[in-house]
Image (cartoon, rainbow, N blue to C red; front, top):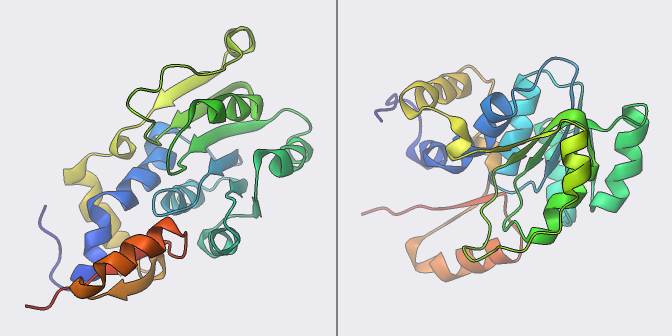
Length: 220
């Protein structure tokens, strides 16, 4: 996709995958509507953009869950109204916000979706609500403890989302335009830049949860 020449390449690089995947998960896959309560589980480079998408959709409450304290604080800068370290901490807050009904939408954007992380998301979703599964799971993941009875009897929907259900030709220029108009945070996603010689440090910082996004800048 061609991008406008006035968008710096280090910012434009983010639009290649993580940004539209997270943003589209909220904008399209979840189909959030005005006044919804949304829970986003995992606020790294994908989840933080799901926060932006929920904000663009004018969700009333955007609750994020992440064990990393730095990412919890950053999530508030991107539009989260509240942020917690675990399902257990967030659950009573979501119940209070929704008069005990549960979230309209729960979006899963954690680093790796292990099987035991799915049912707690269902428990936080209201009757008739939607769970969006964006996170990649282990290829051989087959065993998933899941309350199928409650899921079926409550009319909930589980929606997979590849690349945020975006269309590259439409959404990459759209995100670039939103950025130019000051309506999309790209600069703020980049916690640190690295030279090519520092690639091992960049990978380790990613594993240690120090960055929202680290960008390797190579000058030939």
